[in-house]
Length: 128
Image (cartoon, rainbow, N blue to C red; front, side, top):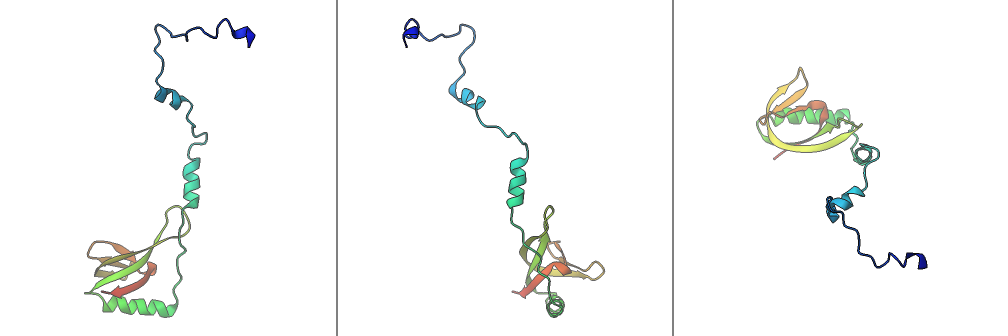
């Protein structure tokens, strides 16, 4: 400690032409950075939950086909599967609307809201 006695009470040096950086900018210099860009996005994507598509029995498919034809002019709630773009699986969503058209060539249902749903993706249909 004795070797610093000559400078310990000196005033702190302030540069003449270069202003001191404020505390916010100074702390940003030492903030952590992403060494691997995209790594956190990759981890979040892996952790994101998706459901598996439920395989329907032939009996359930027949019931749904009958419901589609019976409920053509009624307000219905359709629960269907949307395949995930990035992972195996997807999510089930429900929509309430009326069936506008049944496209047997493309095996789709077209609703009045212009939503198109593949018949093979439908899990359930309920009349409201």
